[in-house]
Image (cartoon, rainbow, N blue to C red; front, side):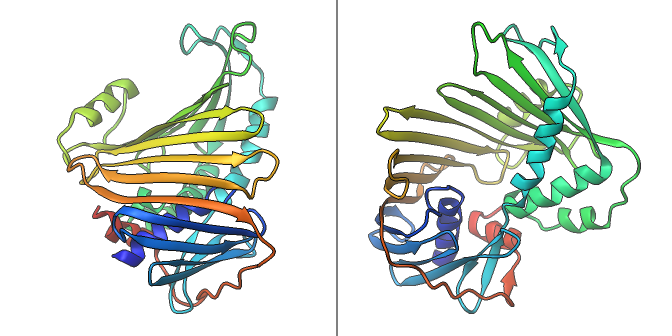
Length: 327
């Protein structure tokens, strides 16, 4: 269990660009929760990392396809970031679509652009999403179904970008992804951004959806483990004073057997991105227990890690997260 906690923390840290900055020495402590009073030491580069948490040693190695293997010489699991590469061309397609004036989502957003995704594109993105976020398939049953699914000439999803009145909100926008594929649960992903940060929500429904607002409300009001769907909701706040950028992230899970809340604050030096410090807490919102609390800081160094990670014995990441969070 302790090793699984370590793997989760390492994977989360490596999803930030600062953590993968070339030649960084990371130190810290875990004052509460699992591995409390453990010291943290590590070396990070753009090719991988070495890290010690208490008496546990872990490594990470970036692979040729851009994925990251996290573990040790005997066993590892894969964290994929391939989804970002797939999203970039979709956003480019979106920008080239005609703009619909007065396509109002609310009084704030006055124009929109939309693209449709084929069955093949939807399947490819869904598989990439499972690589990047194993929690979406904690039972390990969705991936086999997707890999065996046919891809008919149908539309299985839409991506819509809403823009606000630029005279009042020059940098405000919202993107919605709606998935209605027969081999997937109904899904809506919504990201809204402005000058001060962003908010996000991933909603998954096991029953047909006619109104997403009503569906989300029903999931939020259901008893633990009784919801006909799942939610991940959160927001970020960003403040840059010209010397440091402070990013705060908060996210909660709803509709799972156990509910969790992640709070993380990271301050990065504008002139030297290898210089940063961060503090985070993962807690169980049903019991109030702190699962993990950690504080980290990073400085530039000339030393480089030499990770040793198994490429043969790669554990199914969904099974790791299922065991870790008791889903």
